[in-house]
Amino acid sequence: MSAGLNVSPSAREDFAALLEESFLQHEITEGSVVKGTVVGIEKDVAVIDIGAKTEGRVPLKEFTGPGREGELKVGDEVEVYVDRIENALGEAVISRDKARREESWVKLEKAFEANERVTGTIFNQVKGGYTVDLDGAVAFLPRSQVDIRPVRDVTPLLGTPQPFQILKMDRRRGNIVVSRRTVLEESRAEQRSELVANLEEGQVIDGVVKNITEYGAFVDLGGIDGLLHVTDMAWRRVNHPSEVVTIGQTVKVKIIKINHETHRISLGIKQLLADPWEGIAARYPEGAKLKGRVTNITDYGAFVELEPGIEGLIHVSEMSWTKKNVHPGKIVSTSQEVEVQILEVDSVKRRISLGLKQTLQNPWEAFAEKHPVGSEVEGEVKNKTEFGLFIGLEGDVDGMVHLSDLDWNRPGEQVIEEFKKGDMVRAQVLDVDVEKERISLGVKQLGGDPFAEAGEIKKGQVVTCEVVEVKDSGLEVKLVDTDMQTFIRRAELARDRGDQRPERFAAGEKFDARVIQFDRKARRVQVSIKALEVAEEREAMAQFGSADSGASLGDILGAAFNKKKTGDEE
Image (tube, rainbow, N blue to C red; front, side, top):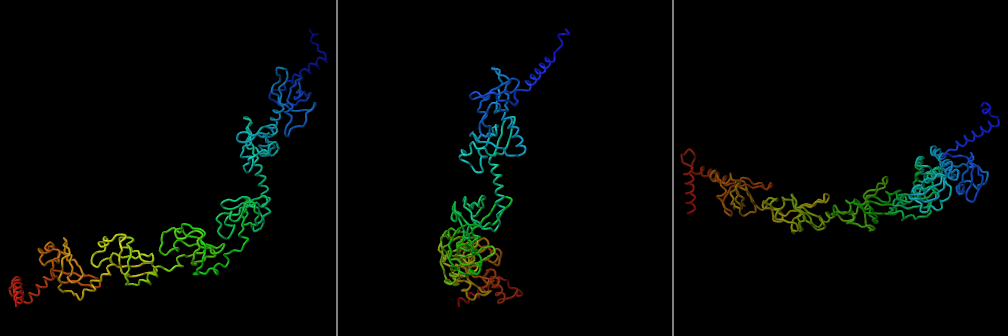
């Protein structure tokens, strides 16, 4: 037994070799990347020994392609990915593509963490974008990330190695998203910074119009764009940039402003021309009248070009003497030549105020000249208000008849109901205020003032009255032989309270009354039957007796009546 356990040195060496070989065999595990040696090339495959007497076959196409090794030959050492140790033929299933992919993922993860660019090749188009080979790893390039501007045809970019920026990586899912646009923007920003550093505000340079928008034009200054705003194209009003520049045109511009943080450059053309606002006040003195062309109409007025680069505003309030609250477009039209007057010039704010109505005669002045106070006019009732009538007059002006000027006797609130819009009315001109643009008219003045024509009526005088209307509160009466009317209150209808009844009278009935108030200036007259009766009583008392004689009032009045009757018979 002991003899069987004795092992020779050579046997021990062979056993050690077997152990080492066994150990190496166990090092080759599925799912790992190992180094192998090309031991043969058969048609379109390469035979690779990965050690431990294990060989595998890899298609030659996995060793070719953009950015990959050159022609493969026997003896080359390559890295391959072990899918399986043995297949049915006793060979290892290995892959060069998967080995390269594993190797690439390690490199890409490092580049992603360091925010470094990677090199790849666009090789196919898929839904929503393109696939990029990053040295074995396949990444997705979204269509929006191909270029700074949309690219219709990416054919020139296919198969060309170029830099990309990794936006997102997911090793577990095997997803990589890259961007070519980010790289271009960074490169462009670096170029812009360098170009901007060589430019200065106030510098005059040539540029090429690259694009035109509603608000201006973008001008290429040799690798960097500047904005030529529409307001800086000319001193005159420019409705659209295409009126001044065209795409592809070479223009001389002045750098107005440079924003070194955003790399935005503002350009101007009008700054290269003489400023037409210099000495503007001397050229356009206030009060001067001149002609201009309407360039723009707004809700608040119209702009008129007086010369190239100089515009003034006719405010809506200065467009017409009589047309108020009317849109300026109803008075003037674009491109129309109009005569205007300079109202104000502000050279600091670059504003000129113009007047259109000032070039025409003030219609109130014209009316006052043609129709002086006291003259008679005729017009149509334009409107009725709580305070009077508005009458349309010659010259497109209105006159107003106040309620108090409608009738001498009746209240205006009552008389105005007799008028309606469209009625033709004759009136007398009472006053014309040109500054306030007011014309005062009177209707009652055409019929004469009954107070002025009443003659000498004095307080205490006895007058004959005719009942116009019987009311519960008294009588509306007219003084016979005059146009004056007044109201007799119930308390003034009789001396005795029992006779102070309006219903005792009838319309058209006449009676005498005593004037108790007459104020020509205040246009006020008051009469009273009661006052007349009291006065007659006093007169009778004075003639026929006194209270001490013992005669009664009835006796005195009876005696007075008999005396008057006897006198009448004689």
